Amino acid sequence: MKTILVGLNELNFEYIKYYISKGWLPNFKKLFSDNRIIETTSEDKYQLLEPWIQWVSITTGKTYEEHKVFRLGDIVGRNDLKQIFETIEDKGFTVGAVSPFNVDNRLKSPSFFAPDPWTQTKAVGSSIFVGLSNAVSQAVNDNAHGKLTKESIIALLKGILTYTSFKDYSFYFQKLLKIKSQVGVKAIILDKLLADTFIVEWDNKKPDFSNLFLNTGAHFQHHYMFNSSAYKGELSNPAWYCAKGQDPLFEILKVYDQVIGELMLKPVRLVVATGLHQKPHKHTTFYWRLKEHQQFLRLIGIDNFTRVTPRMSRDFLIDFSSEKEAALSQKLLNSYTAEKDNIKVFTVDNRGKSLFVELTYPNDIVDNFSIVGNTKIENFKNQVSFVAIKNGEHEGIGYLIDTDNRIKHDRIELKDLYDFLLEDFVTKNN
Picture (cartoon, rainbow, N blue to C red):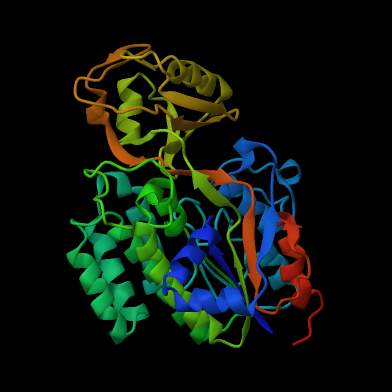
């Protein structure tokens, strides 16, 4: 039997059950009522409760202590870690994937492969498929300041025309009309398009093992949980950020409900996993992202890098030609604090010849806000884009549903999902 692994990253099943109780999400209702919901456990240190760590545990069958992949994109070049994708392919089966999280494409002949937007690895498929993959990556990585290149716009339109049915055109049209009046519309469109693309590619190629990963639900819980009618806490988002009455989480769950409904009709073993879930954040934390990473680095005196790679949200990677240059740049970045409250602006992880940098300043950045370090940067607000306000934070328990109901335990370690997924591929039997 063919297997589809669907990653609904970090979704709170408790919230989904709330919407089901209100008469919504019929396909989730059927999925939940017909199958056992299994809890997954992961790491016991909060700094390790990151999805790019947990999904590597799923795809390698190893704990963090065994795989040591700590950052998004770090899987690339880690050929010592064999991923489930190439393991299954080596046994003679076909493999396809759309946006598998923190996965390096090492497949010899994938049915189709579009990497997640943050991992620098090769897309494989038709020219429209590869163009769409590149456009999604550009759209996601430039989300903070809303830029879309002409090439990306054309590729996205080609993708919609190729991978969506006529009945979905009205969905995309209605969402496009609301792209300026409602938050999160672009993210909803992109996840819907990724799912549509996966379904069409799967129908055409029918790979033995495939993976679809969707992240907008996690993003909305992180940044708009307080607007969810399922949230019963006391905090709320300001109206300028997300208007009262808007519920972005419900909007993406309606999309996921449709996707789940379509996949449940296919003759496959469907495995749905969240990796983690989220709990409400307890105070106000702002997320910021540099607008032009290279330009800013040169402004503060760092110009000896070989490459700068933006990653998810506020993170970016800087590569250097020597450890000495990286160390000097680390010292410079670490020197910067906000003049207003003396809080550090950046957190830096030195990896020898590269620095993984997070813009971790947590408070509001207003006009005439300055940072001081090696030099003083006036009007730092001009250098950054507002990303979001933190609403949700990671919790180590995740959820898992296997429509074959083979997993008899109420709770398993997340890494053990690897073995359960491999069951049909241990010996070639097709």
